Amino acid sequence: MSKAILAVILAVLSWFTAESHADAEMAEALGARAYDRAEWPHWIDEDRDGQTTRQEVLAEESIVAPVWTPDERRVAAGVWICPFTGERVTNPHELDIDHLIPLAYAARHGGESWSRAQKRRFANDLSHPSHLVAVVARANRAKGSRGPASWMPDYDRCGYAQAWAFECMVHAPEGLACGLTDWRSIGRALREC
Ligand SMILES: [Ca+2]
Image 1 (tube, protein in one colour):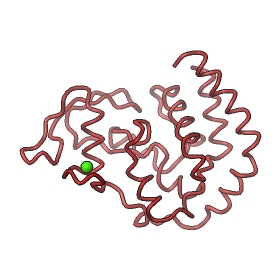
Image 2: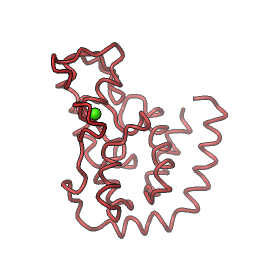
Image 3: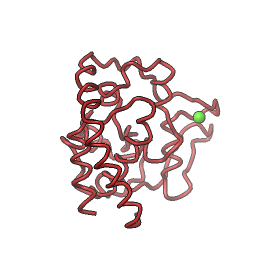
Image 4: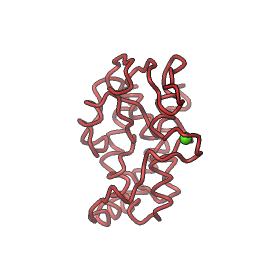
C-alpha cells in the first residue's frame, strides 16, 4: 500500500473514531440480541453456476489455476497462501472461508436489523476480495467472531488491519459500525505498517 493511501486511511480513521464513537457504542448496546446463524444463509450459489460461494472463493484465491472435480462444482486442488499464517496449502479441505468481518460481529454491530436478503448478501459477498478469505481452519477457529481489538493474526497484521479498515468503511453506509476499540487496534496496526 502506498504511503499516500495509508495517510488517507489514517486521516479517515482519526475522524471516524472521533465521530462514530457514540454510534459504535450504541451499536454494541443494540447488538446484545443473540446472533442467529440461520438468519445469515451462506455458501449459497447466487449465480446458479453450480458452485457455492465457498467454491468460488477457493477458485478465486488459488494462486494457480484450480483443479475442479469432474462435475465442475468443487475445487479439488490448488495452491493457497493463508493470509493469517503465511502457510502454503494445496488441499482445500484444510481451508475455511473466513468472513473477515465475522457474521456474528456484523450482527452485533448493526447487521442484526438488516433484512434476511441483506444478511444473505453480506454472508456471500464476492464483490471485493477482502470480504471472504480462504484461511487455514485452525486460524479461522482461533479468531471466532472477534474483532481486531481481541484477535489479530501473528502473520501480516498490517495487511489484516488494512483489510479491516477497508471492510468497515465499505460496509458503513449499510449501517455496519465497527467498534471503537476495534478501530483503535486497526489504527495502531496501520501505524506500524
Ligand atoms: Ca456460484
